[in-house]
Image (cartoon, rainbow, N blue to C red):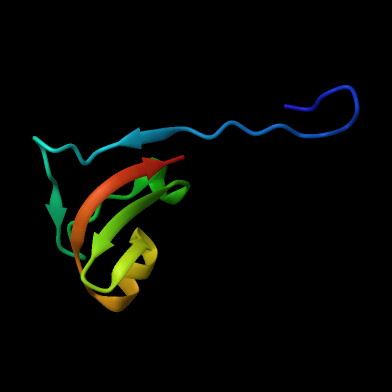
Length: 69
């Protein structure tokens, strides 16, 4: 939304997926699209922390940490 000074404010939402009692693992084909591709998912892989797009390009899966939209 636009404020009086002409500065745009954005809203960012974060949903934590990984919890100590619930760990979700996904292969690169099973990573779901967040908000039809408008958001991103953060994964922990053996190559480090990366986004869902990077993981799909590198064809590696991992543990889903959170969704950001």
